[in-house]
Length: 181
Image (cartoon, helix red, strand yellow):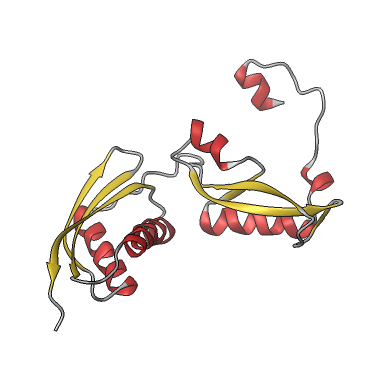
């Protein structure tokens, strides 16, 4: 009601309490997720969140329902839920230096595939998120199509998970091929 008042909207005609639709275990899981990772699972398809709030979308989850119960069978209907990381309150701003982000990208490359060598990392920060340009040296003859896409996702996921900053995109460029011995 306070939110509706502040937004100048009419009062809600019906209030649904969280306890009426979620189990105590689900509520505790949500509180833990919010407290430790700053993430929320909301019952909205990712495309709806991405359209209006692309900066808070973190991941998606498929939930399978059959007659009101969660199951994993072929007859169950799948519903998509979105994992979001909204900015709550005014706790301050988190930023990372270019050098720290470059070190994290190099560490990710070493963990993902020790044959990938990061030659340069460029960083753009628009105040809300980061865009990274990563220039790689990779061995000649290694199939790269799937590997580079997986590495790109690994970098984004690792940096967001361990720092809490939002990485909007990572552009990979293979600028050198090395010969393997």
